[in-house]
Structure formats: structure tokens, C-alpha cells
Image (cartoon, rainbow, N blue to C red; front, side, top):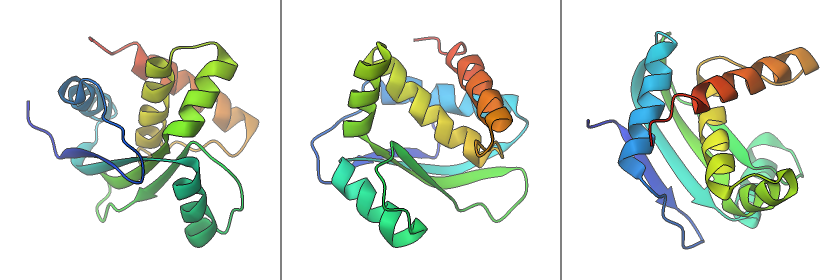
Length: 142
């Protein structure tokens, strides 16, 4: 199935495994939440690249694994740019004792969940976000 989802890399050599299956999975998660997928761009990058975005656009001088920009003009529509630090994902997967693939998929869907309206500022919101991530990961068919 064709989806308006694109995957790029900036300043690193990285290629997502199974991009068509990942796209189908993302579209399934969005549809389950009753929203329409308009367009998603994922940019896989280094810590340095994502740190620069964090400082420049969000005024946060910290490392992070993901930054999501919501570009949707219409309620109920998912459209955005998602920047993911492959360095952070790799370190986090090692720290958490999980596979790089599972941690990458968790971060990929974390960005989608933000675009669907979920936040993770408080402990309660973070717990709900984690539950949504787990639920979304369980929908993978690949």
C-alpha cells in the first residue's frame, strides 16, 4: 500500500529496514486513532544534528532521541516532520537491554503519537504514552 511517508537520513549513513512494512504499520496506528494520514517525513540523523535543531527551534540545550514538528492544518489529520537521532536510539537500546530495531520502532511511533495528540510532560501522560507505544508495537506484523 502506498503511503505519504518518506524516510531520509541527514549527516549519517542510515537506511531504515523494511520501510514499506513500517509505513503500513504507521498508517494502521493512525487509522486506529480515527485520524487521516496526510504526510510524514522521517529524518534519521546524528546526536549533533538533532542537538542543533533542539537548540535552534526549541531552545533546549540537551540531547534527545526525537523531535516532532506538527505541520497539520486540519483537525484529525496527521502531518509532520520527525527527526530521530540514531545515536540516541542505539545508546538507549543498549541501556534498556532491548534490540535496536524495537527501540527504533518505539521512537518512530512515539513521534506519531505526539502528532495524534498524546503528550508526555507529566508522569501520568508519560505512563499513557508508554501504554500507547506498547499497544502500537503490538500491531506490527513484520
